[in-house]
Length: 143
Image 1 (cartoon, rainbow, N blue to C red):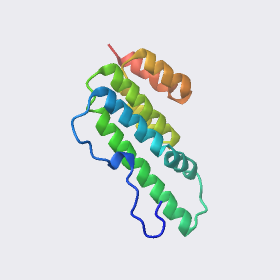
Image 2: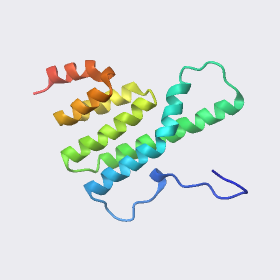
Image 3: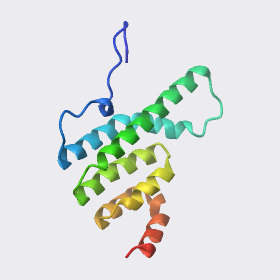
Image 4: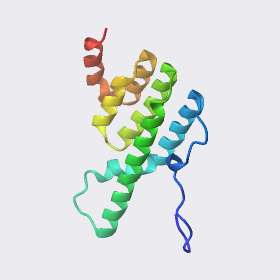
């Protein structure tokens, strides 16, 4: 928030990484990105149904949508750098939760399909039963 002409606050995902980070630091970064953008994601998910708009509401909705998408891209970019499979799956679970808060089911399903650990897949399914149909198709096409 800018008050009295102050500079705009930097978002968590806009902060530069000063050195290569390890898997644990990357997972923590993803967690903080997802938590920071959760409020915007929830507003994006709620606003998806509204038909009545005002100019001010449109501007805020646009800002929330942009904030959600920037956070999503940053979190996915960090997740791709994680080498440990289990740690990456746990981080992707955080991103799936963020997507579902924003009612971005297509992205959530795609990311859910990338989770390899059965325990993490089960946790996601217990939290979000709507992904249940995808689970059956992934198991039937798996090895």
